[in-house]
Every structure is written in C-alpha cells, then in structure tokens.
Amino acid sequence: MTVHAPVEVLTFGCRLNLVESEAMRRAALVAGQRDLVIVNTCAVTAEATRQARQAIRRIARERPQARIVATGCAVETDSTAFAEMRELAEIVPNAQKTASAIWGAPAGLEPSAGIEGHTRGFVAIQNGCNHRCTFCIIPFGRGASRSVSPADVLREVAALVASGHREVVLTGVDLTSWGADLPDRPRLGDLVTRILAEVPGLARLRLSSLDVAEIDPPLLDAIAREKRLMPHLHLSLQAGNDLTLKRMKRRHSRVDAIRVCRELRQARSEIVFGADLIAGFPTETEVMFEDTLSLIGDCGLTHVHAFPYSPRPATPAARMPQVTPAVAKARAARLRQAGAAAFARHLDAQIGRRITVLAERGGKGRAEDFTPVLLPESEPGTLVAGEVGGHDGAALMLLRSS
Image (cartoon, rainbow, N blue to C red; front, side, top):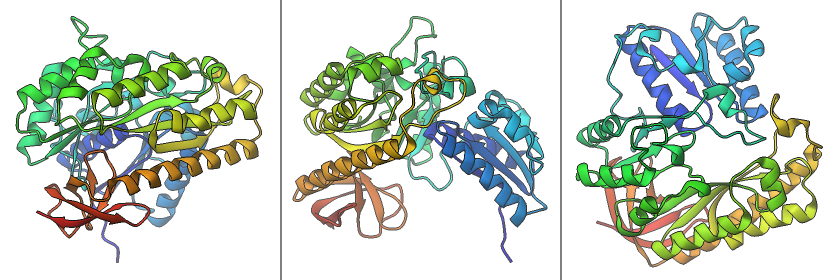
C-alpha cells in the first residue's frame, strides 16, 4: 500500500514556482490539510500546460479520494480549459496562491526556511513582469513587476543561513527589474552587496536568470569583487539575430549580448554562462538561425537551454508567419548539440582544478560555476573541496576531497 504525505505539491516550470510551492505546502500543513494535492502549473510553453493537465488526470485516476487543487500561470492563461476539468476540486488564482489564509493557515505565516528535499535555499525577491516580449505569455499569468523589500529579503536570507543553508539563490520572473517599484529605486547590485555585507554567515549567493539589458554597474562590481557571489550567470538571450530580437521585442542586440559577456568575463575570469535560446521563432530563416547558433561560441556559453518556439494564444508572435514545427524542432536539436559540445569542452578544461562543491543527495553536487559534480558520499548541504580527476561526459568527478 502506498503511503502519501498529507499535502503533496506537483510543480511545473521555474524556480519561482518551486519557492511558491513550498509556501503553499507549508501553509496547508500548518492548517491541518489532509489528502491534498496541489498542482502548480506553468504556461511558458503549450507543452508545459499539457503536461500539467495530464498530471491532474493521472492523479485523479490513481488517487480518487484526493482533493486536487490547481494554481499557477496556466490556470490564468488557459482558464477555460482548467475550469472544465472535473478532476479539480478548486482553482486558486495565481496571485493568491501564497497567501497562507487561502490554505486555512494563519495570515502572515513566516516564510519557510528552505525547500523540502533541496540543499540550497531559494528566496523569491520579485514577481511579475512589465515587459511584453511578443512570444511570452507569463505577464498574463503573473501581472506587473513587484519587488520584495530589502528588509524582507535580508530577513529571509538570514533565516535560511540560521537553519543551516550554505547557499541561497535569489529568484524572480524578471530578476534584474528588482527595485524599480521601491522607494529610491535600488538596483539588484545594491541588494546583492547588502546581503553579502549584512549576512556574513552566507557562504554562497547565486542569481537566477538575468536580462542582459539590465545588468547594472553595482552588480558588475559585485561580480568582480565578491567571491561569495557564485561565478555562474544564466542569461535571457533568446536569439542571436538582430531582426529576430526586434520581432521578439527584446531590449538588447547581438552586439549587446556579446559585449556584456565579455565585460563579465573581464570582471571575473572564471565566470560561466548559461542561456535560454529559442529556435524557430516566427519568420526565422536559416541565415537568421545561424546567428543564434553562432552566439553559443561568440558569447562563450556553457549551459545552453534551447527549445523550439511554441505559439501561445493572445501573444503577438502567435499571429506572425510561423516556422513549421518540424523545422523548429530540428533547429532546437542543433542548438542542443552545439551546447553539449560547449559543455564537453568546459568539462575537459576543469580537469586538475581544485573546486568547492555544495553536496547534494546521492553523491552529487554543484561546483561554484554550477557544473554538476560526482563526489564521495557527503552530508547534503555541506561544502566539499577537492581536485577534479576527470568527468563522465555529464559531470565532473572529484579525485579527492577534504
């Protein structure tokens, strides 16, 4: 007989959803909820929405007694489809899902000190987005940009460190827009500097996805001088062709992307870049795609997240002349292949280096530059130093540790 936890949360999509899922789980547990399954959906692609609805149907078949509640971006952007699902007991609006009272818990429940099953802590410092990229449906699901106050961010980071976390990740929908709606309009770099100064017990601070159009001078300065700020940045690039970027309504050019990567590498020689890249955006020709493909080398990308364009209803790009799905899929595969080759070169270059790894469960961990590492069994959440003896094509192998 399978024993289920009183409250289970199935999370799709971004790290912000992961943070919000833990807040919901904790609030429902405090409220004494039982046999509850919360499905926290994602709307970034049609496939993500399809997978969430498929999961809801599967849970209903396997656990007919469970109360299933759906929330997240997809319930906002595909509201009719979810409203028609008889398997759901309730739909919670995305904007209300982290309010503890929604789940029956006392209002103002303190944030959770970490996420169950994760060795690093996550702090959501921003939500929503004021930009309207033509391919993106997320603003329809999350609304305008809102920033968490510096005091609240510092309080949560300090709580995570007090609970034993060595690494904290700052996350949000549009992270680099943090502070624009706050008094005195502080920048992300200012916040990073304050965290590292006022929470001296924090060993490692990591940032989630950044917009290259908004990397401010204080952030660049912090990257250069703060060794506790991890040398890995995930950049929201999307494409490498200027006409495509213009049609996407992005705020940077190809030259901007290459320049920012060069400046960051000059500031911190060991820095490693990841990036989101879309293949098969409407009107994209083979020549335009080649510009995106070559961006992997021109920017020196190591961790490539490539996916075929997926038209989302109500977005301007969905009304543009479409590239056939087969072509978009094939181009995405070529981006992944180029990304895999770049990652393999990165792994080769690490052999013989001494690194520090945040140990996770199952003999795995992450280096400071977010490279996966296989290491001798270590206590999850501890920092393990050692020399890289080789790799298996997917992760580095620690030769010895101390």
